Amino acid sequence: MLIKDYYNKEYAEMLADKIIEKYPSLDKEGFVTDIAESVEGKEYTQQMQAIVEVFDRYLPEYPETVKLFGEMLGPKLPSIANQYSDGKWLSPIGKYVEAHCAEYPEHFQLSVKFIKEFTQRHTGEFAMRPLIQAFPKKSMTVLKKWSQEKNVFVRRCASECMRVSLPWAKKMTAAVERFDDYMRILSNLRYDDDKYIRLTVANNLNDLYKYDHEKAQYIVDSWMNDNPTKATLWMIHHGTRSLRKKKNAEEENHDA
Image 1 (cartoon, one colour):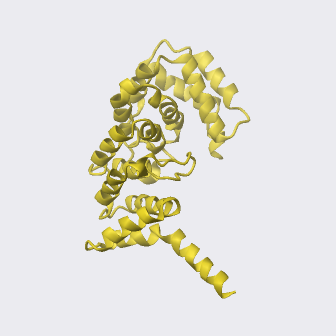
Image 2 (image 1 turned 30 degrees about the vertical axis):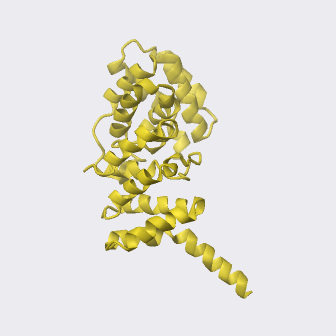
Image 3 (image 1 turned 180 degrees about the horizontal axis):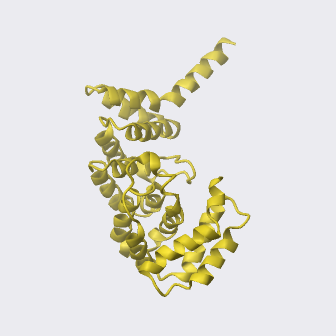
């Protein structure tokens, strides 16, 4: 099944039943029909936006709805590998928070608390990015704490949400612009043996080399001069893959 085919009338009915458990006044028939009609014939990203608009029509204001969604999340996933399979029912909920969280600065902590829980059931990096963009100082303080959490889902989110060129997201440089904080967060994770943490840190470096070579090289040089572990060396090697590819292409063109 294509991911876009998952969000259909049956999905809407399942989601409505979960909501009604916490919000009995939901107009289930209207909600289900609205989602089914709104997503039909659309691609995934358009479906997510369409469902967010249905949420806006049928659910309370943002603070109340975030609290409602927080009560619906269910058990934490056993592995990051399950984020996109077992957690896909939550994608529109994450998109809702992504769409609205920056509009409610007075509820910054509510949004952050929700995203921290959400990312342990699906993936919270997309929802966190508008907060980084709108409130960089406060957000980076949060991410520094997250980068030292025991929970691997939360540690991964601390890094992944900062990426300059996160796939399926708009380019964002707000995190890198607070470079001391950005480097501290990645440095907190450089010894991590979890493969998903190694990958997200490496992808941060790879993105950064394309955006600001000097800053990326500064991080790498710092780590290389500070007794790098096997995990750190892997992050550096994978994080410089595009740089090596570019150098190889330049050498081939020079020799031609």
